[in-house]
Every structure is written in C-alpha cells, then in structure tokens.
Figure (cartoon, one colour):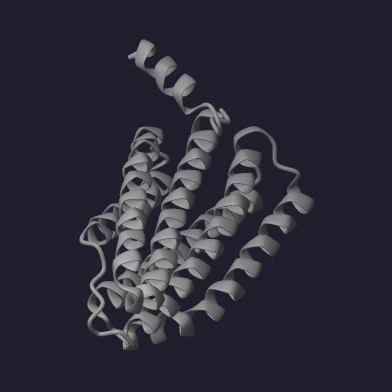
Length: 228
C-alpha cells in the first residue's frame, strides 16, 4: 500500500468517526427532547442536520477520489466500501433524529399525553446500539458488532408493545389521537435507527472478516459458535 493511500484511508476513518459523534449526539438530543418534552433540544437537532449533510458529501467525494487514484484492493477496498455504506447510514440516522425532534415538538403541544413507559426503555437500548456500533467500527471488533445485531430484536419487540399500547389509547381516548400518532411515528423512527446501527455492524463484520452476513445472521452466528 502506498503512503498516500494509507494517509487517505486514515483521514477517511477519522472523518467518519467525527461524523459518527455528531450523529450520535443528534440522536441523544432528539430522544431527550421526546422523553423530557424539551423543544429547545429539538431545535438544536434540526439545526445540526445541514452540517451532517455537507460532511456526508465530502466523505463520499473523498472515497471516490481514493478509488479513482489508487484502485485499492482486498482489505483496503473493503475499507473504502464500508466507509461509503456507513457514511450513508449515518446521514439517514441524522434525518431520523430530525424526524424524532419534529415529533417531540408536536407532542409537546399536548402536555397531558403520557407516552408508554416502554418507549423510554426502547430509547435506551437503541442509543446503546448506536454507541456500540461506533465502538465496533473504531476497534474493528466483529464480536461487538455481532452483539449489536443480536440486540436489535429487543428494540423490535418494544416497538410492537409501544404501538399496541398507543393503539389502545387512541381507541379509548379520541382526544389523544393526535399526540399518539406522533408518538407512534417517533417509535418507528427509533426502531429504524436501531436497524441502521445493525446495518453498520454488518458492515464492520464485512470489513474485518470479508463476509457479507446480511439476511443470514443465523448462519453466521452458528458457524462462529462452532469455531469457538
């Protein structure tokens, strides 16, 4: 590998880690805005989105430049491909954080509405998944990435519970329909953020082990259990 390519890969990695930090903060502020009824935090999230969009384009341009100039192969090529995919997922996470912030502002107009308690647990698990996906990427740790993938089922289960409870609330209290619909949307956005953390973790496993495990988690986990 040339020194120029190595420097380019190192710079890409740092740019993506910085972007990860910005997006993680947006998600944390968005869910705090939702849970704590803090519209000031929601405003901060929405104001941050333009910077994330700009950085996403810069990172993608740098990836394409490295591909064109140095034609990396093997693990270097996998790293560039992974950065492109993770970069896109982070931008989508930022958009979802903005959506949650907008739902938080709408729910704040209904001070008597009480969100299901499971939503708070769901938020905590999804936040942990995002944080662990970042750690897995920084540390090139497929085991930590696999733990993130396994955790996604918990968020899916909590999302179904929250939706069922919101549906029941709307049936028995028509005045709660508007805030409940907004809470329903926020719950779906949180669930989608967890899915993207899972996707990033799949990309980490591809980066480190060169194996595409999308749609075949069970096969991957079984084979690794047999090896250990």
